[in-house]
Image 1 (cartoon, helix red, strand yellow):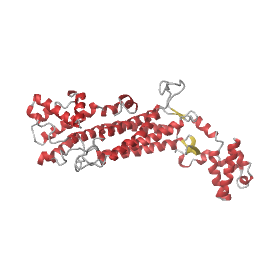
Image 2 (cartoon, rainbow, N blue to C red):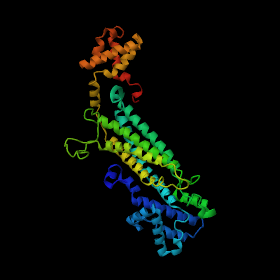
Image 3 (cartoon, helix red, strand yellow):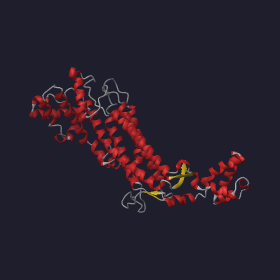
Image 4 (tube, rainbow, N blue to C red):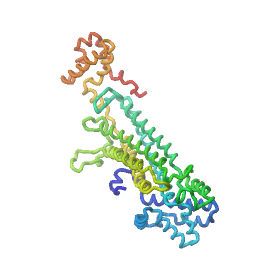
Length: 437
């Protein structure tokens, strides 16, 4: 994990609370509490024992600094966690303390705790996804048919509508979230296999306890343990990383549109936000910054998980442990990105006048394709391309509207009437599927 200052800049307090020390340890204690309840339910021991254990499965009864120090000695937090829980139970009920963590192994606790955390994290992400969808729909409803410059390779191309651009953002967002939902359903499963994955310590009761534990924790029951088979959780992290990349696309488009030289959109004015330490006039696009930072960081975090997928035999040495900080980092980046982009789009101010101004500044050059295609029907594509290319160069060099150059060229006017040419240069007639109905 990064330090608190930089961590907060790139995520949300809600997501931080899920993956902070308290959230992590409580998820592990929730597993231990549920395991005790499952053992009681399967008649392995009396309900009073489960109650005695559950009483101390509260993170407030543990010292995080002490556990942290001990964890560094054991290579896992579970050893000192279980030892302290056992000691707490033993003070009041010595016999009950012998059933703490019964049948489980460290990886069962950590993996299941991570799944518990991820389920909570997905709820947070979904809220902001829905918020962003609503914001994009509002932009489409209000400005969907506003004509603007389409840009390819960062250069002006042909006219499009602002709605086309926003609809692209929305469609990708919904696809990406659907992919997350599918992978989340697959990954939201219990991990419970004991020392080597076969629940040998529970004997004939193993499967019954597993089923009961799955039910209590409201997690799916997998076909087998996944101690060294990480495909489901990596697939979920992959889909979340793709979502972050899609959010980065939105942020990049908006950051380019809101440059002062373009000015076609702007963030909701807030004189205290995005200030420069050196230039009083400057306001930096903080929301774009957060989303783009996430989009640049997340692929490398995902690469760590992919690289670690080959786990040795029944328990990995290093490959599993690297997930502990990597998975939370991916979800924290996702939370920061989606929240930032939702905030930005909710307050996005669109400037139709500047869109029209930027179109006008191009002197009609963006309609050259349409004229060339029509002229091609008369003189052939090669000849038409040569004529229109020459006209565009003149219009640019002379800073003259393309229509004036075209109307002064007899090669064109011998084939196309003035009225036909004027009609070709009408923007509304060359929007194709870009027009929002």
